Length: 152
Length: 318
Image (cartoon, rainbow over all chains, first blue to last red; front, side, top):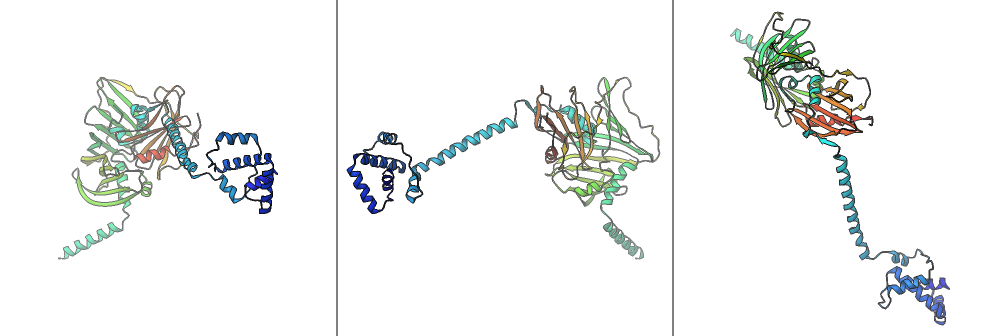
């Protein structure tokens, strides 16, 4: 019967079976209660809770009371049920932008550390005269002989 | 009338012969003239803001080359070279510092003995003629085929081929270096009385012995993809200053310019140098790779310095 109620809610029962199932539900209070619970669960998944009289607490209570595993079939109706509403999709660009900013920030920080480690000296502040002199000794250039190229 | 016709025919023939002649022969002649002729002269040497007058005496006795260069401005400074060996004498108020160096490719002998290497990387262009130091000169341009070298403008003596003037220009036609004879004269004879330093004998002589360079055969790292035309001239290991660790020193040349590459492991207690700077016409670029400091020095475009620095691969990690 559980299966039938679920199928009924998904509008997948034929007309004859649907009528019989509805009659059974009306006769049996437990079945009616179950039907209502299933309806709540389905509506919560579909985000179609338009009845203002239903509170989230009642939904959660219902789900807690009835921890059944819904079988998600491949019907077009169900695909639309798992589709997130436009308002929810709109949050993704914001989240993606935030993550991108974090990523770029992390890259800049990493590169800064990589490019300029604390254990280094800028060459312009500490000109390596001994290396320039070594170059002039082995590289026979006019500058090496005629001009003092060493930093003063 | 007959003389005019003969003169005209001679002129046309000489023009035809000049056109048919390989233009690079002029450069080869210039390279040989600086080494084979005996000459004495004074030239003005300029490197950015520094300008010096230099007196040069050069003699080739058929077996060896002897040369003496004396700086006429500022502190006394002279160099005596015999073949590839050169002794430099620097005087200050109290002392005379004597240093041994390698002396080749100095003005006016800036061209390599074999100009084939220059042909591959430069285009030769002839321009007009000018008088330099009282002599007629043909202007030629050595135009680089890529961004890795400077442009050379040379004034070649019409008669002997000797370089009377040179200008090294960067890509914006800005002068990097210039040398020009104010006066020049050829001489014959093999007298070597002039081949001695003119220094004050009352001063104290100090031999400034640089740390000994050892020729290295160690494959410390792989160097590949150098700028076109650059070849390894030498590879030595030596110490630098008071530091105990060995520094690998390579010299690369394209025949006209020289670049040094230094590689050494960075001691744990020492800060490494990074960045780039310029000292006179020389660029210096330093970076760190696998715990090694890589430094490149040379009077070449910045692009050349960086390409040589990036040519290091498979470096030993420290």
